[in-house]
Amino acid sequence: MAKADTETRQFPYLPDSDVVAVQRGPEPGGIKGAYRVFGETLRGLKTTMARMIEGPVTIQYPEEKTAVYPRFRGRHKLHRFEDTGLEKCVGCSLCAAACPADCIRVVAAENDPANRVSAGERYAAVYEINLSRCIFCGYCEVACPFDAITMGHDYEMADYNRGDLIFTKEMLLAEPIERTPLRVEGE
Amino acid sequence: MSGGRSAPAHGADVIARTSAEVVGTSPVERTGADEAFEIEQELMTINLGPHHPATHGVLRLLVALEGEVVRDLKPIIGYVHTGIEKNCEEKSYWKAIPFVERMDYLSYFFNAQAFCGCVEKLLELDIPPRAKYLRVIHLELNRLHSHLVWLGTSALDLGAMSMFFYCFRDRDRILDIFEMSTGQRMHTRYFQVGGVIQDIPLGFERKLRAFLKEFPSRVDQYEALLTNNEIFLHRTKDIGIVPRERLLELGVTGPLLRAAGEPWDLRKVSPYLAYGDFDFKIPIGTVGDGWDRFIVRIQEMRESVKIIEQALDGLPEGPWIADDRKVVLPPRHELGTSMESLIHHFKLVTEGFRVPPGEVYYPIEAPRGELGCFIVADGSAKPARVHFREPSFVNLQALRDMCVGDYVADLIMNLAMLDPVLGGIDR
Ligand code: SF4
Ligand code: SF4
Figure 1 (tube, rainbow over the protein chains, first blue to last red):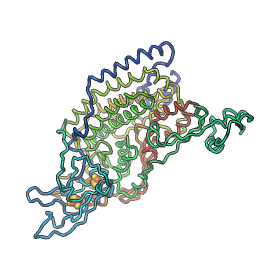
Figure 2: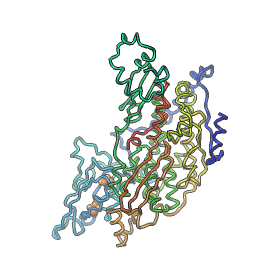
Figure 3: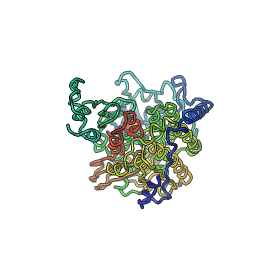
Figure 4: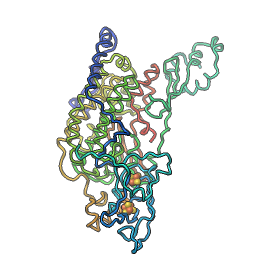
């Protein structure tokens, strides 16, 4: 051990005060080893048993849902204006340009003034997100200048077919069937 | 075939020879053979992995065994190759950040820091002090998280079942903290070129402090469960020793090198971010066996807690991302009011920022050793080449030196204490 200490000092890049040598701990075997087999095992059991009073940290998942934080990035949502009911998305394709996984498809079309779909000049005739490719980075949300797409809080998206994981505009506009519980800020 | 008894122990080509010759040898043929020939015949080549719980991923080890003793070993990698480095060449710098985070999936903040730090160096961009401190907090939490996964899975390999549950319980608390501040539990894309994307939310400090208060006692418990455990001592002490000089030759870094007594830690040697401001120590081992590798990482967790506490105490006020409109997205509230901001936003999102031509290598100290990012920029908005020096990849080379001559059970221990992450090795 002493040898290693002197060797350490050869290195000028770290002064001794920055380095701590770790303890070697007991050597196995011998009388002390025989003690450890029994004594320390019992002490270890004490440590594990003491954890029992802390109660379980797991939850009964499908019955009880994990609450998420407000910033949690789950399944995407498209939004409408609350007063007019028009879609916020104007089909500018910025989200598709920002997506690192290339999983958004937007086809824009001109709004018919008599029957407007969105508030802007154009609207998204097709808006699809392929959730089997999405990496939930949230860049689409960052990119959208009109807050038309945001990351929601739903995380239960498993399905039997990959095709069912392509979410269309209607699915993204609809309210989720079941609300994910949300933690309050600071909890 | 005249190598004698010691030849198989360090013959690099044992595997090549045995796999061809062992097959089909019957005991009858062996009886008349000379001794050296006989030993070679008794070597058995087996595959450990690629799907084996003790390889911590999809790692295949081609092992030549003489009875229970490892005579040669060859790691075969590439089962989770993702081509991330190549993919980055097709993406603008901004879009490559979520990609590189997914290489070593246990140290995503480190991957992001290596990449962002490298780009910032190419751009000669200074990041605000608050961003530096926030990055340090998240990096060190990530180190705790990575070491906890290592401790849990390694102890599980050595037969300590409850450690796995305890470690994952605490790891989950760290992931909760990440979810609170970044929105995602893993692969958070929180670090952006120029700083961090959002400030920490209300209540973050309280939650983090509660965790920091409790965590050291948890580490004490883990240590108490293992350090005096006779089986654990027998399994780890004086096994897998590789001399310091050999480790340096192989380029091994991180806790493995420090366990052998070399005080090499980039946080101290060339402080990046705000590491120069903090008071912490570098734990080093003395012998360099499995035990030292274990205890060095345990001590590192304690030091990380100290760093986080100091960073939280000294967290400066101010912006959390640099105010450089050429690189950083403008704040959201400006998009509705300023046409100029909107144009910047469009340009940054669609094309990305341009990086002046040059080459930069930027190393940081990841949980497994020196993680370096090397970027060649050609002046466009996409990197010409991205390369990562992955510590797991380099460290894996030391496995043969650790294992040859020991029992196959020690191979499991050595691999556990090596802590490779295959996502990082194959990238
Ligand atoms: S979260 Fe990321 S990967 Fe998913 S759709 Fe949005 S930008 Fe694409
Ligand atoms: S969601 Fe936003 S960014 Fe994407 S097309 Fe619609 S308006 Fe543009």
